[in-house]
Amino acid sequence: MSEDLVRNRKALHNYHVEQTWEAGIALQGTEVKSLRAGQGQLQDAYVDAVSGELWLKQAHISPFEKGSWTNHETLRPRKLLLRKAEILKIIKAVDRKGYTLVPLAIYLNDKGLIKVKIALAMGKDSASKKEALKERDAKREMDRIRKGDHD
Image 1 (cartoon, rainbow, N blue to C red):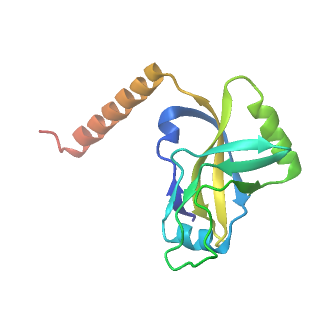
Image 2 (image 1 turned 135 degrees about the vertical axis):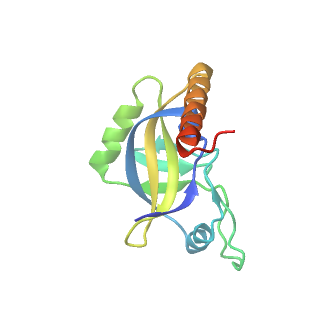
Image 3 (image 1 turned 180 degrees about the horizontal axis):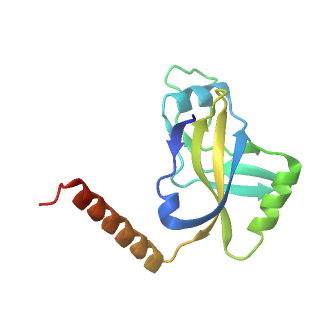
């Protein structure tokens, strides 16, 4: 059972998710401590392919409270760790028209390692977003009626 440290809540609202992968991430010690304390944010983050490597960019990890001069830079690019064949497959998928890589969550896996869940996604237009909101509201209403909590 994995425990989410940081979740990108807007990603599922803004994108149609096609496929997901689990990637390791190269972090400094103070970054690990900050993430375990819940001091991270993926709201504006994205994954970029540079020279055959995947990098997590614009992910905000706050400086560790009890850190000193060894504290990390909050928005520095962080390397994602995957097998070379998997990286090439992901880059090839992103090269198709309209696709992007979006981080969905940073979490602790069963072994206590910090992982990033990344998704191959396509942006939604505003009509799809409105439709998704309507469906969600209708589902909530049906659940409320089923439970007997109607007014």
